[in-house]
Length: 414
Ligand SMILES: Cc1ncc(COP(=O)(O)O)c(C=O)c1O
Image (tube, rainbow, N blue to C red; front, side, top):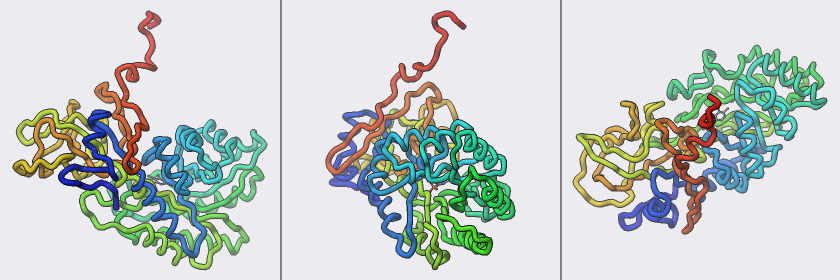
């Protein structure tokens, strides 16, 4: 459920007309609804009943610090995968004890930063990474908190590039290796084992794969009980799918009920790391139709602004900002000005749009702006947040000087 709706043929975010936003800040522009973000965060937070829960929003999905601040104020912690994301979460005022550091390739510097800031846990994905964390902690004369990410070898049935829980994927370690790493932890006085974690993929539309992974986590926990090894938390990652073009989805409450049933009677805290299901439907991208040619609408936004259609052949609904009741044309392709045939924003959409019309590409609040680039030397779009009847700029549109700000050599040293 989101807060984008038509009022007399004009598209609104909450109580703000998107036409007004485009008039003030231009296009392409990402617009997020605060009420939608809060609603989705609460849909998770308020669903924990028998287990103590912590929702760590996955910063990679949408990392603007104003958004992180909004989610922090709703009660979220953060799942991060880089020193840069740690920096953002801390700038947003996150409680370090609600920060989980995931990812297969944490550098030494990132480990130092995580330990210095006293984060909740490093989710460890290999023996070498665990060794390195132990060495870093020893050098700092500190104890690093560790959760082992196991790979349950389940196929979550999603796009090939967003599956992360199969044996052949680069993520996590097998259950057998997880047991070895747990033993290594208990023998290293600079490491403190606090949790068990997994994350099986993204945009998952059924409970089945989550269930399979949780059952394996439970088996491992029962084995650890026998060894008198107690953990603070079980972190089941993120992955819940959203509706891009009207698909049926699993609700956060259904997922949490499923986990609470499987982990019934356990004392560990349940941590989740949702990204997409909190922010995707909270964002639209405004773009203007520059030209119309054959079955192409050529927009002022492109794959550098929204990469998902080109990268994953992802589908996004496209809505006119003003319904003009023109003649509907089917099978129109919305493309950008970039010199790539794959530069699609949407394919085969029904549209009544004409040159000059404003469009809203929907469900771009996750893996949208964060994946944008300067390809073709295009400045990145602006970001706006809407709060009831007000809207605020939360990231300025880049300009040409932002494109070249870090480049050197014009003074003759090259
Ligand atoms: C470790 C980890 N946790 C959480 C997420 C968030 O996943 P989603 O946005 O599908 O909820 C990801 C995304 O890939 C991830 O890699």
